[in-house]
Image (tube, rainbow, N blue to C red; front, side, top):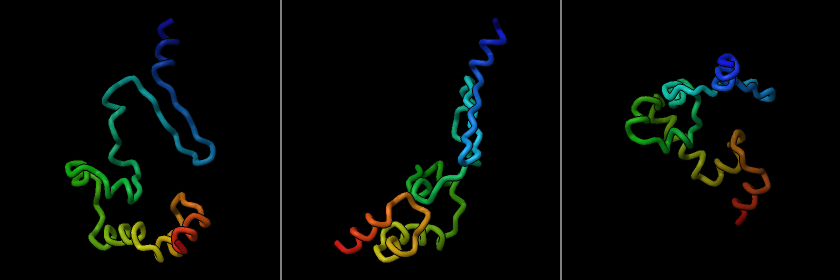
Length: 96
Protein backbone atom coordinates (compact mmCIF):
# COMPACT_ATOMS: atom_id res chain seq x y z
CA UNK A 1 0.00 0.00 0.00
CA UNK A 2 2.82 2.44 0.82
CA UNK A 3 4.40 1.85 -2.64
CA UNK A 4 1.17 2.98 -4.29
CA UNK A 5 1.06 6.13 -2.18
CA UNK A 6 4.63 7.09 -3.01
CA UNK A 7 3.99 6.51 -6.70
CA UNK A 8 1.11 9.00 -6.53
CA UNK A 9 3.28 11.57 -4.77
CA UNK A 10 5.94 11.49 -7.48
CA UNK A 11 4.64 11.83 -11.00
CA UNK A 12 6.64 12.50 -14.12
CA UNK A 13 5.14 13.63 -17.39
CA UNK A 14 6.96 13.71 -20.71
CA UNK A 15 5.83 16.09 -23.40
CA UNK A 16 6.49 14.24 -26.66
CA UNK A 17 6.44 17.32 -28.87
CA UNK A 18 9.07 19.31 -27.00
CA UNK A 19 10.73 16.39 -25.19
CA UNK A 20 10.55 18.17 -21.85
CA UNK A 21 10.33 16.18 -18.66
CA UNK A 22 8.25 17.69 -15.87
CA UNK A 23 8.46 16.30 -12.35
CA UNK A 24 5.69 16.92 -9.86
CA UNK A 25 6.80 16.14 -6.30
CA UNK A 26 5.10 16.57 -2.97
CA UNK A 27 8.18 18.24 -1.42
CA UNK A 28 7.85 22.02 -1.18
CA UNK A 29 11.58 22.62 -1.78
CA UNK A 30 11.46 20.92 -5.15
CA UNK A 31 8.37 22.88 -6.22
CA UNK A 32 10.13 26.25 -6.00
CA UNK A 33 11.26 27.93 -9.22
CA UNK A 34 14.35 26.37 -10.69
CA UNK A 35 16.90 29.09 -11.53
CA UNK A 36 18.25 26.99 -14.39
CA UNK A 37 14.99 27.00 -16.33
CA UNK A 38 14.90 29.14 -19.44
CA UNK A 39 12.84 32.30 -19.25
CA UNK A 40 11.96 34.30 -22.34
CA UNK A 41 12.78 38.00 -22.69
CA UNK A 42 9.32 39.17 -21.62
CA UNK A 43 9.52 37.15 -18.39
CA UNK A 44 13.05 38.36 -17.68
CA UNK A 45 12.01 41.99 -18.21
CA UNK A 46 9.11 41.62 -15.74
CA UNK A 47 10.92 39.88 -12.89
CA UNK A 48 10.99 41.36 -9.42
CA UNK A 49 14.24 43.07 -8.44
CA UNK A 50 15.58 40.31 -6.17
CA UNK A 51 14.85 37.53 -8.66
CA UNK A 52 16.24 39.61 -11.55
CA UNK A 53 19.55 40.02 -9.74
CA UNK A 54 19.82 36.23 -9.46
CA UNK A 55 18.44 35.10 -12.83
CA UNK A 56 19.02 37.86 -15.39
CA UNK A 57 22.60 37.73 -16.63
CA UNK A 58 22.03 39.63 -19.90
CA UNK A 59 24.14 42.57 -20.98
CA UNK A 60 22.66 46.02 -21.50
CA UNK A 61 22.54 45.60 -25.29
CA UNK A 62 20.63 42.32 -25.03
CA UNK A 63 18.09 43.93 -22.69
CA UNK A 64 17.74 46.92 -25.02
CA UNK A 65 17.30 44.65 -28.05
CA UNK A 66 14.57 42.64 -26.30
CA UNK A 67 12.67 45.85 -25.52
CA UNK A 68 13.10 47.05 -29.11
CA UNK A 69 11.79 43.73 -30.42
CA UNK A 70 8.62 44.12 -28.38
CA UNK A 71 7.95 47.86 -28.73
CA UNK A 72 9.21 48.98 -32.15
CA UNK A 73 6.56 48.25 -34.80
CA UNK A 74 8.85 47.61 -37.77
CA UNK A 75 11.18 45.32 -35.84
CA UNK A 76 8.22 43.55 -34.18
CA UNK A 77 6.43 43.00 -37.48
CA UNK A 78 9.21 41.98 -39.83
CA UNK A 79 12.20 40.77 -37.79
CA UNK A 80 10.83 38.86 -34.80
CA UNK A 81 9.91 35.28 -35.70
CA UNK A 82 10.01 33.36 -32.42
CA UNK A 83 7.01 34.93 -30.72
CA UNK A 84 3.50 33.49 -30.56
CA UNK A 85 1.78 36.19 -32.60
CA UNK A 86 0.21 35.47 -35.96
CA UNK A 87 1.73 37.15 -39.00
CA UNK A 88 -1.69 38.49 -39.99
CA UNK A 89 -2.17 40.12 -36.61
CA UNK A 90 1.28 41.68 -36.80
CA UNK A 91 0.63 43.06 -40.27
CA UNK A 92 -2.77 44.44 -39.34
CA UNK A 93 -1.27 46.15 -36.29
CA UNK A 94 1.48 47.60 -38.44
CA UNK A 95 -0.96 48.90 -41.07
CA UNK A 96 -3.38 50.28 -38.52
